Length: 245
Image 1 (cartoon, rainbow, N blue to C red):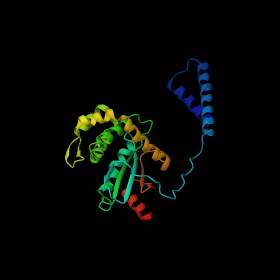
Image 2: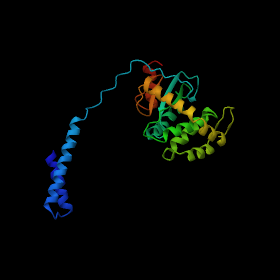
Image 3: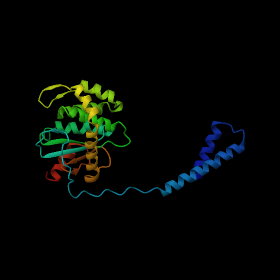
Image 4: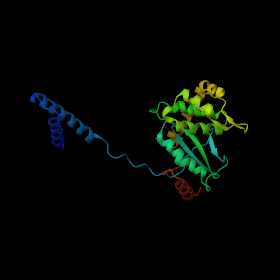
């Protein structure tokens, strides 16, 4: 394998430029051999396929707590999602799965959606986005979900300036039952002054996910504590029937 790779590279070098000094070519080949040997050692030392996850034998205990709920709050079926606002798969799942669950005639009044924050460390804007959603939620549960949609849609442009802009564009059902634009002044005050409170909420969600539900990535979905393998309306229905929920 190593000889084949070296031969291909040599042919490439000869085909793309004329070598004035054969010693230079020999030196390049020697360095290439060293790199390939190092690569082969790394590959041989690499672990095999990760072990298959153990089959879940009982439902995880994932309390709703103070998390925001979308849908019928008295619904017996709870679909919990651990999500990251900067994760493209989370955005796609919200549009193609979560919203479809809420639109499905068989599920929309029987299932409630619960949001748990799980910002990944390599997504630097995910946690600030979670705090923006929480700040919007101070004015009503619907305000949280409307801001969530804004954050997903604009996830490539997450910034405090845009959070404030999107807040000014967001209409939602307030705590008093009226529908109106978010109070931007209150939103910004909550976003800037309640950082420590939001930090605790986010960390509590992450601790819950990691320690109680073995969450390692996003998005992760659970139906009454049972891990959902496929993100589809039919998968939810099948799990409900399988577990007699």
